[in-house]
Image (cartoon, rainbow, N blue to C red; front, side, top):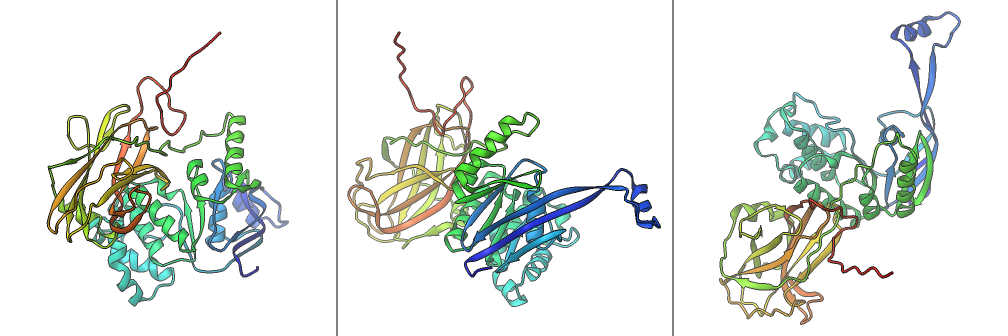
Length: 435
C-alpha cells in the first residue's frame, strides 16, 4: 500500500455457513466423514477498492448488500474468509448503536473504557472529558448506567467519543440517522470540520443527498459485490436506477431536508432586545470572532410573532437576531445562512446585500435585526448560522468577523397540503400554455 492510501481492500470475501436447523450444525461438527449440512452464503464476494488519505468515500446499497459487514472487517471486528484489508492510521468507528458500551457502566465509565480501547491514555481522556461531555450534552445522565439511555443519548455519547480521539480514519454506519435534528446538524458540522482537517471518512448511508454533498467518490454494493464505483453523483444515480428497477427493494430513506430559500427579505431594525442566557451557554462552543459585537439570542417567529421551530409551507417567518456591542463599532453588518442537514449552504443574505446600513454603535449598546421571508422550502430540517462583522459595502465578505455562530437555530419546514415539491424550493412560477 502506498503512502497516500488510508484504506486498501483487495479481493475481500466473507462467507457464512447457513444451517437449516440447529441440529444440522451439530451433525456437521461431529460427522466422522465431514459431511456438509450447510449451504454457503457470501456476504461479500471479491470486493476491491481503496480510499486515499483525507478522502471521504460513501458506501451505499440496499439493505443486505454487505455494507455493515464490510465496515466491520475494515475495523477488525470480523475476519474475512479471504482477501486482504490494509489500514494506515488510527480508526474511530460509529457502527451499530451502542457497540462497545457496557450497559451496566455509567456514561462516564464508558467514555473512559471506549477512549482507552481507541488508544487514548488516562491523562488524555481526563483532558478531553469535558469536551466529550459537552458535545454529547446529556447532562446528569453522564453518571447514569447507559442501559437507561434512549437511542438518541447512546449515539450522542458514542459520536462524542469517536471524534474526541482525533482519528486518522472515521467510519460512520447510519448512526447519525438517530437522535434529534439539532444533534444531526451538529454532527454533520463536526464531520465537515474533520474532513477539512484531513481526516479520512468512510460513510455508509441510504441518504443520497448526503452522499452527493459529502463524498467525492462512492462505492455501490449489491448482494455482496461491487456494482459500480466512481464519482458520487454517478454512483448515486446508479443506486436510484437500481432501486427503481427492483420493485422488492426498499425505497430510498433519504429525507428531503436539503435546502432553504430565504428570499431577500425586507429587513428592519427591531427594538425588542432580549438576551437568552441558555442560548449563550448552548452556543459557546460554536462561536468564532473577535467578540466586538456578540450575538446574544436568535429566534424564529411566526406570523403572530410567537417563537416557533415548525414553519408551515407558505407561512411568513421572521428570523430575529439580538446583538450587544462590547466595543465601539462602525456600521456592523449582520447576516445569516441556512444550511441543510448535510451542512450545505443553501441561501443567505446580510444587511449590506439588502442595502440596509446600520448606524455606528457604541460599547454597551444593543440592537435587533429582523430578516423576514416566506417559507417555500422542501419539507425537512434546516440549521441557521448567523454572523456579525465589518464588511465591504456590497456585503460580499467580512474584513473582520465580530461573531459567527454555526447551528444557532434549527427549524423544520412543514410540507404543503396540496402539492408535492420536487426540488429544494418551490419558487413562484407563472405558466402559460399556448396551442
